Every structure is written in structure tokens, then in C-alpha cells.
Amino acid sequence: MMLKNKNAVIYGGGGAIGGAVAMAFAREGASVFLAGRSLDTLEAVAKKIAEEGGIAETAQADALSKESVEAHLSEIIKKAGRVDISFNAISINDTQGSALVEMQQDQFMSPVVNAMNTHFITATAAARYMTKQGSGVILAVTANAARKPHLNAGGFGVACAAIEGFCRQLAVEEGKHGIRVVCIRSAGSPDAPGVDEVFNLHAKNAGISREAFETEFAERTMLKRLPRLAEIGNAAVLIASDNASAITAAVINVTCGELAD
Image (cartoon, rainbow, N blue to C red; front, top):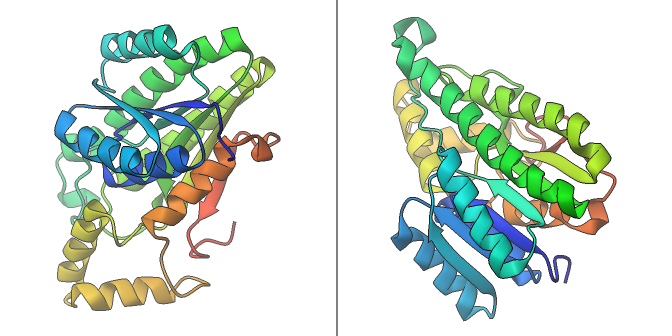
């Protein structure tokens, strides 16, 4: 097992990406601590993990609140003694479907501000504990829009680019403490409800069906398909494991070749 005896905290653990990564981490031996604002969705993921023989705990915590995050991490340390992996997959509440010149300022700024707030809060809190133990991995998830602009994506791509920039900065500061910081960049998983909603919106704007939009998008990739949630989870396992011990300040390309690096 690639993550045996590791403790992983996942913010947004009840969501599509957070849940997929949590399932993958648990299968590889990690004890998973799911955090989020809705206990119902967290408990649903924890139940699936338990059914597969994994270990998961849930806690109501707000990843946009410094006090909430630090209180939750303190509880994990009391129970488990250490935190080895921190992964933030919360929604940043972006608005898509309109050109920038047609958007309100707060619609554009909201995902950028949310992204910076939550990643600064969760990543720096984890880093302080990881520094004491001399090791740790901090993960984030972004999208191809961070590098390749897409029509009517609002502030989403800008927020993703900001997350990647933040991770590079944190990596150069914390590497001396044995902490790695890595982003996983996806092209969007069509089996994720949020991506499905966005695809429907962009398909409507383009005047084509949802199925046609996904097909056209997939055709632009080298593999002629889009990454599934399980594949994002598998990539996260690899990067969080000691098999990737020399990788930090990197953006891992899980776009099925929609981007070339």
C-alpha cells in the first residue's frame, strides 16, 4: 500500500473530487480525515470507505475559517499524532457563462478571493505542523484553465492560476522542512456533478447539446477523452506517496493531453 500509516486531511471531502481522492487514499492505506461544512455528504463518503475496509473520520469544519481549520487540525494531532497529507478540494463558487465585460466585479473576484483565502489558511496551518515533524505533502487541484484560457470562464481560470502560484511560493519556503507542495491540474471530469453543470452551461452558450460539447472537448485531447474522477484520485495517491519524494513546486498534468505539459 502506497500510503500505509499516513494520515490525510481532506477539505471538501464530501465533494466529487475530495471524495474520489479520499477513497483512493483509504484504499492505499491512509487514515482519512474528512472535513467540510455538510456532515451528510462527508458521512456518505466515510461510509463507502468503511465498506471497503478503510479508515475515515468526519468533522464539520469551514476551510475558509482560520479558527475552524486550526481547531480541526489540533484534534487530528491529538488523535493521530501527526498529519502527513493535506488536500484542499473545496468549491470556490465561481460563476461561468459570461464574458468578463458583462460580469459584475464581485462575480469575477469571488473565486479568486475564495481560492486564496482557503489555500492560505489550510496549507499554512498544515505546514506549521509538518515543519515540526520534518515531512509532509500539501496538495491542491486546479484546472487546465489555469494555463489555457477558455471563453466565458469568468474568474475560474484566474483563480486556478493563483492557486498554482501560491503552491510554488509555499514550496520554495517549506522545502527545507521536508514539505512538498504539488498541484494536480485536470481537464475536468465529466462524472463530477459540478463539471457536468459547467459543461451544460457552455454547451447552451455554444448552441449545441451537452453530449456534443463533451465530445468536442475530448477531441482536443491527445487521448481523445477526459479524465475520470478515479484517475484524479490515482494521481493524487502517487504524488502524495514516497514514490514521488523528489517532486515539489510542480503542476501534475492530468488533462489526458489537452495540455502538452
